Image (cartoon, rainbow, N blue to C red; front, side, top):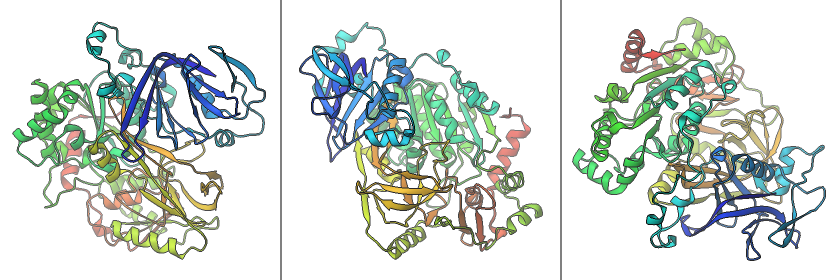
Amino acid sequence: MHLECTVTLQQVCARGGHAVRTTTFKQSVIAYCIDESDRRVLRVGRDRNAQEFPVLGGVQLMTQFVRNGKATLILLKRSINLLLSDADPTALQQFCSALKTGGQPRQQVELVVEGVPKRSIDSLPTGSSTSHDVVRAVGVHSSMPLASLPPSQMNSPSSRAPGKKARDQGRPSPTWRTPPRANRNLRSEEFTQEQKAVMRAACDGHSIFFTGGAGVGKTFLLREIVEHLPSSSTFVTASTGMAACQAGGVTIHHWAGIGGGDRPIDELVAMAIRKRGMQWRSAKCLVIDEVSMLDGALFDKLEEIARRVRNNSSPFGGLQLVLCGDFFQLPPVARDGNFKFAFEAHSWPRCVERTFELTQIFRQSEHAFIDALRQIRLGRAPASARALLQQCENRELDNDDGIVATRLFTHKDDCDTMNKKKLKELDGPQITFTARDTSQTDGALATLRSGCTAPVELTLKVGAQVVLIKTLDVKEGLVNGARGVVVKLLSTKNPVVRFTGGAEITVRMEAFPLSQGGQVVACRHQLPLAHAWAISIHRSQGMSLDRVEMSLARVFECGQMYVALSRARSLAGLSIRDVNWAKLRAHPKVLAWHEQMANRGHVLRV
């Protein structure tokens, strides 16, 4: 199997994670072969001096922009990235599929590349082997999509030839650029009518805010929107480090170049120009996830910074905004308790053209439970909701399969204490998995380390309760929040986890990337697992938990009780202790704003 394309070879510092050397091979070829020593290799180049890279350590495939002729191959354990661009999208898809599903060839077929015989892995095994088995055999790891790095943007200054900029002037746009929005087709069968309405508005260039309760698919929809927007001019951010890592972007503070954002506006404008001036001016669309946790005063500052840095008097400097969040969940964090919601910002009405509310719930399927959660989201606990949840009070959840319920706490320290205690109680050997972080900038690395859900170190024993922190396979139920227990530690040091439902999966390192403008700016490689005896309510946002137990006695924030209860997939998997309905609150400002928007017809429902 071979592919004609441009290949950029990026050598990464094993410690710092930054690129130390970048070489681009234009109009080249990459082949997936077996060499004379029967090693599986990726071979780059058209002549006898072509470079070969063994893939025994595994390859991480990043294929978010494969339809644009781009992909990234991360050679695990070798600190090498191969950035593919200018490829035929169909051929690239086939090449990546071969890497994902390839195994031992049925027969060794001779492939001649510029006079050098190679045995191609074009014949792939079928029969009883599952796709998971084949992936394990080859050592190629598929992952959630990650933006590939456009070679023209990845070259370090030292690697660029003199006069390159002048020579490039007047050339047509390279083929790795995202096609115009009008050419991007929505796959209608994958979206609800609500989601399609939001997608159309975003792809038509409107500045939008879409919201909805827990479990309506906001994260899924945001990722789809980003995939359909031009990668080189669309920047993904979030209000917090954890939300940024889950969205695959960086914090809005880091992207804007304004530090904590607490300085006078003139200083912030100067900082933004000095640190991120080119980025501000090249952007066409700014995505902000969890905007509900962004202070309104900061939103106003960002809006003024955008106008001044971009020298554009239009709202937010003419940038298209794609905003997402739920103001009924956790509010902005304020040290002194004083904050404004983003919708209270003076510039919000000018910047947000359309507001959408998603209503179809995917996390839960029981209508009575869904109705109760909708009331609780609004800060209400009618008799019907209390009676329904009363059956969950002090319930002992089934754990015959060895998977115990996750305990939700309001405070992180309580979680850490319980997880350490439970791990220590387990007998047998333990293995500690240390994350490998790579980054282009200190700021991106700081975002990664402060917010990435994958831990820096993860210690496992047989019997350890774990939760999946990254969606791997929706059809198989391997989604963010899937619960499991470690049943075996292989000689390769990979854990075998039995998930709810009985499936036993060998879990391997995955990539947790942060991307900006179609470029990976930071990435953590770690097992997509975390200890699951206890999780904080804040960290559980975005998770769907099969079995969850919670004590609600120490709830202290508006929306906190709703966030906790809405993590449960079903009533059968929910156990409540120390419930105090007097602590159920929705913020009065959010209630008033939501009702006002609905009465004025400003919230669009399909």
